[in-house]
Length: 457
Image (tube, rainbow, N blue to C red):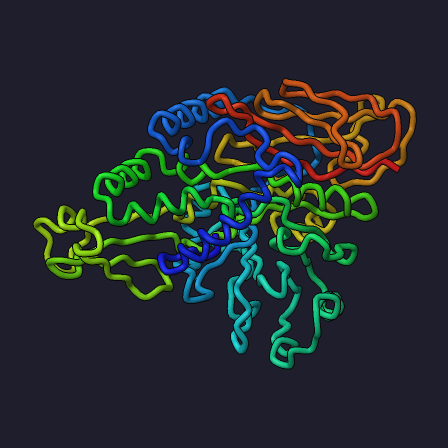
């Protein structure tokens, strides 16, 4: 997640407050499909407990998917930061450890470009302890994974604007995706491999109410203890409390995909930087710290409740530590599942270029094995990402590990909805087809899986 430090809370709250009325007004359609509770309601112990219990039930009821795609399902994390800026709290060894503990097979790093540091040659590349690393950068509005170093181009700043940057990148070769699409709705995508259809930071930007509540917690001992308890008992549920569907971004993906293949990927935007510490600064003041920001002192005169927090504490003593986004948590929240023959850079790049992938909120339930294919005469004719000619007898087949609401789209428009772990749909016309799977969690419908498209011409 991008940095939202203590000093930036006012700015973030103001930005979110400006965004919130537009998104809540319905001008872009219902901004929060499936929502029953606000984020703060989701953060009650009752809601967190219910969500945790239903997640466990889903995980325990998973079934093996029988439909074969012909590929191995590799869990990948894209838009991941480590050792790359002052506001990134995590290291590459830390991200490797988290990948191993969460079953992540591939990490596509996205260092902030900082010439003369070379985000290709000065990073990790290849397999380390079973995890494949591909170096790249979040730069100029894109996620870029060049096949070789482009540090000379950065030092010379040999482009003006996104179009020239894309042309420069294409000469080198690699994979390029539009990033933070909410800021770039009108940008052309015909020369790109894909775009982020879900970005964790984007999703968080309308959480003004939560940010006000969090800021008030630093001088409220009861609430501070409550948040510590929530994170200790239901850390994943706390992290997932702001999850929403992003209709404006999905609409751009659908709109642009009509004319060209455009791989939808997930952006974890993980930094491990949402770590707040509250310490005793003096007998009458506390100090609040967030990675990348100078400390902020608050006195008992400014907030009388601080006196209770300081009882029995000496200067420098820790009062509370709130770690919202350890890599294990953020990497388990959402991922891009890549269908590939092999676990190597060449095969992974090819799959991303050809849309053999799907996005999943793994925190709800492990989707591994999910299949979306086209069949004819009982045989597999295409998998997600493929293009196939329309013919009589062609059908689409979907199979997942759990029963879910399966929504089938043609050219961005819903054409079928059913509740099952399988779907068989007879095709009657050409089109660009994709599916979404939604799970009911604590009375709310939450998006779970977004497939990439099968293009029927």
